[in-house]
Image (cartoon, rainbow over all chains, first blue to last red; front, side, top):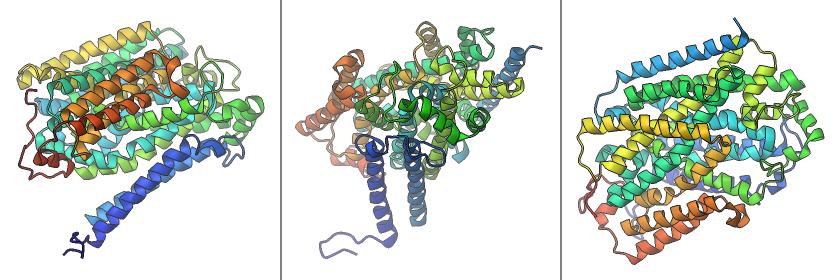
Length: 82
Length: 501
């Protein structure tokens, strides 16, 4: 099946994979920005301590954990799409 | 029995156990080149997880990481930041690489690139870059092993002997078992590393300061500069944002480009195995946090180690832990060194023969395997020699290796994703980028904004690749389509491994 422009129509699973891939790219672009200068600059001072950790350490750890979660979601979508 | 003797005995037991695992794994693989280099493409999720984690987390993470936290404060967070960022592209690149590997019977990264861009000089140049980057990385691992031995035995086993004993074991099992031995020893080493890292990282802040929060509050009061990004240089002056940010970017780009990582992709049983390895990778990354805490725990410690890289063994020796526990911790640090060093030695020897010599000299399967084994010994010897005479900071050694490895990213991505890329373009970009990297490595004072030399090299490499490719004749559509579209049915220009150029 094709669209009016002649492009092949994507099935829902393939569309979900394509959307997820884009989201992953956006997430990791944001990751790169917010752990380097200037994105990390607002989080460069030690205070506040959260869970006993200085702010820059917690900030970067959150991106690492978020990165893991996004990769897990991507894998879930891939596996569901077969 | 003296304390250092008990510690040495525990470490000796660990080394014997690792050697046993490596030698028994050797029996599982076939005797050909595919068996030696790619473990017959049979690894599942468990060995792949520990191979990727173990190959990336090395003596650098286990000793250099705490060393940086101790001496340079939050500058160490660059190590925490780059791992997941760097491995994410591997979710797509890894399975595609493995599929192409199975289709064209590839066992190295340069074979992947030169099957798309047929050129013997390109193959030899990639082999040269890989081996040149591997030597400081193997030196780093040997230095780590030497540090552990000399520190925990209080000098009874000198640095040179400690490195020789640990790498004698590594070379033996790599020689006999190849990729299979590397994979299964990495499983054991990875488990030991994780247990030790979390055990120490949680124990020391509580034992010395009453908790993680109180530890950082005391550090903030005494040394606030250690807790403010981008941290400090080795000489105690503030690090620059340019150096900090490009250290992250260079390491992230380089992480997924290590040639031994590609070789391990060719060992995977399926695409799903590789994808799951990437998804599980952040669990390895998080284990850096306790190691960083160990380094911070040393900041206000009563005594100082001989150098920053000694902080972890120094702390465990000075906090009165039982000798048996100290021995297990040392085994963990050695495991970190060996689990990377074995993959590097195996990778360097395989690449030198498969990409540097085999394209020029016709060799039988048996001859290739024997030459690889001889090179494991030779490269191990060279790295050992330099590790002994030139004891550099562990993190410095790793950062210097990443500059060249970064230059492999444009050829790999062009091979897999850019139809218009040409052999001339890729070769020109790689040569220009590598020369730029080496120039700025040798002349660090000329780097703008203290940028990492690998990033400056990429700023030359990519435009040269693109412009030269656009100015040269495109490859036949069927040939590039076999890689870019990942089609197995491409006909026109079906890739041949290594035609003459």
